[in-house]
Image (cartoon, rainbow, N blue to C red; front, side, top):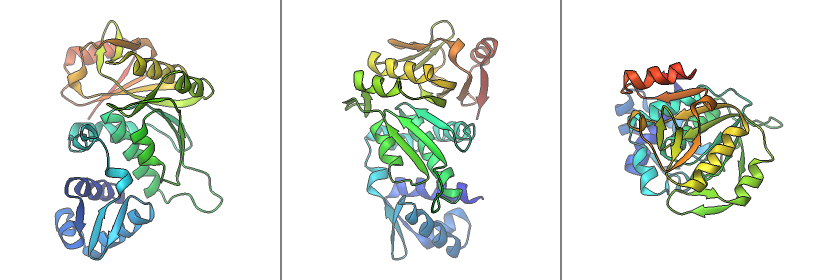
Length: 264
């Protein structure tokens, strides 16, 4: 098991239980207690947890999220999708993220990768730049020195933690992204990708317009589904990352539209 995988597993255990004991974690991950102690020390340095005698407790900023975000951490499909999407991001990229359960997992995967890579030393620049309109993602990344964080501003939607409105659009009109990773509520072969709320769809649409590459992350249950507000057509999408339960017909239609489909 690599360091990145151990860190992911430790943080998942911490999210579920609220605290970790070194010996218990070592048994669960089948590694030595010394390895777990080193991992916890390094994660504490990255402000991803709080070290205690004999273990660790959750860091408040990372885990005080709405229930919908907490519950998503235990959805293995979304975690695998997020890891695969994070692998498509190169060091130095400017990455856009909208709000949602899957993009929240992407943000955590990017933070773990940046931290495991050694961090930003004295005089070193950030590993990544992330531009987001999601307050919870901003909370995840604000304490990560390896990531330059740009938050759009705007009016907060309490149901989703997303910032929307003219202030949000004004900031996005001033930036250029290498890649945007979008969470969506529906993928229709004719209409494209959609969201339930029109103001959130508008932000996601502008993120796509400002980006060189557009990656959609979604579990297969969204395939063939329609939502209220259209984000963009399939012709604007470069990659879809989803789980292996995607129907063959849906995958074929995406491929026919010139989209690379990655299943995990």
